[in-house]
Amino acid sequence: MTKIDSSVPAPVLIIGGGPVGFAVALDLARRGQRSVLVEREAGTALELLAKAGTLNERTMEIARSWGIADRIANCGFPSDYPRDNVFCTAINGFFMGRDPLHSADDRPVPPYAAEKLRKCPQHLFDPLIAQAAMETGLVDVRYSTTYNRLEQDAEGVTVWLEGPSGEYALRAAYVVACDGGASQVRQDLGISWEGVKLDNSLSLMLRIPELWNYHPWGKAERFLCIGPQGTYANLTMVDGTDIYRLTLVGSQERLDVDMIDIRAQVQKALGPDVPFEVLRIVPWWRAQMLAGQYRVGRVLLCGDSAHTTSPTGGHGLNTGIGDAQDIGWILDAVLSGWGGETLLDAYGAERRPVAYRNTSGSTKNYRAWIDQSRDKVCEDSPEGAAQRKAVFEGMSASLTQEWHSHGVGLGYRYEGSPVIVPDGTPEPADDPTLYVQTARPGHRAPHAWIRNGFSTLDLFGRGFVLLRFRGGPDGSALARAAAERHVPLTVETIDDPVIAALYEQPLVLVRPDGMVAWRGAALPEDPGKLIDTVRGA
Image: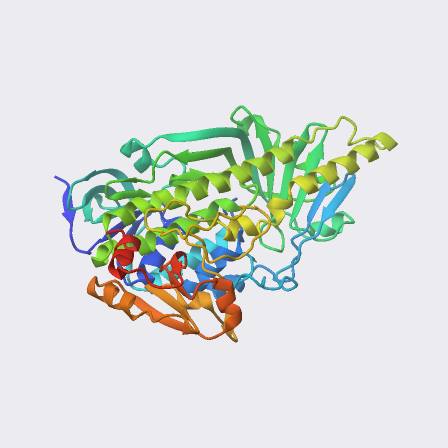
């Protein structure tokens, strides 16, 4: 008979101990909520993963709210390493062009963000965020534990797990599935999984000491290798010293590692004279997929269990971290008793369109990679030189939004969310490259430095914040309405006219996740109704 484990309270059970699973646990813990996290592997980052490495400005702002931004900045990736992209036919072949991108040392913090983009490869990021979550003392991590099945009722969810000592059942108020693109939880819930499969690729983790000594182009983060058939390989620096990821771009059939001459494929991209060691081989399928819904009852999908994307843009992990932040404050509100059922509905209403937007942009980048076939790019001839120039110029223009995706990272919005109160202003353009701050409801609250090192964003995170700008009306009625409903809300008065102009209205209500919920020139006649709307009552 399966035993019921009630030894540890589990308001939230998180299935999957990747970076998004630990992000959910950390966000909940920062709000005082306990969770149990189960992971089928025996530990975190036990293998060198051929996965994400770039954390955009918004993810770094979220990390700032968690208190780990400095850890990420000092993760071990060299801060002086350039992020340039080199286009070539091969490392020992023809040079096509270069898109320069600043290293962390040379890249300033943008005027519209509190943090700068950082490079933190996933084999360093995963243990970093796992350690931060466990340090809170509010996360019970159970490795070597597999999800088997679940049943839910009006009071909670019973989840059957297989641990080192056998099967047991654990009760939780809510379950968050972070178990990846092949999510068994999603399948058990009967949620549709729709999208487009782009190709089958193969990632090789290589050790190449001092690669820059074997070509004249210096250090770069990425080398795009382009032949007559288009981009056939992508060599990306992983750790800033000697570990690279070589991605062999795609086949419509699943790649059989045993049938591929790995050495020949690597030498096609590197040339015959570059020494290398193969550390790991990972076949995978590149796809843009999206779950039909993000929630069934008390079970919610998060990260890759809800969406998968081509890595061309680096939006997969960053989108998952945004999911984790949204789900964190919502579950905290519901568990604390002041959040209503509509808040749970809002999670999918807000995050699913963002995932579709971000994954679609990544697919567009991928097609720019492969849609550049030229028959003479490898020829040492005037025609070959002309084609190489044309390919570089075309790809450089098409991939601007991949290298410069400030709008993707910061400009997402929760249009149509049931817990956002629109103010009637038109929706601004959603440009993947450019970002213009706005305090329009449903958007990220604008950043501005209130004083040295202290941003407006540092005011947000624990509860709702009503920003009252100098000369604005009194906000005490809203604070009273919130207190009556046990909704955490503070009123912050800001005297800076520049910040007031940025927020446009004298009163702006910001959610615990830093998104604007409402703004206006005066409080509504019924402040309680406003509070009820934004808390999902």
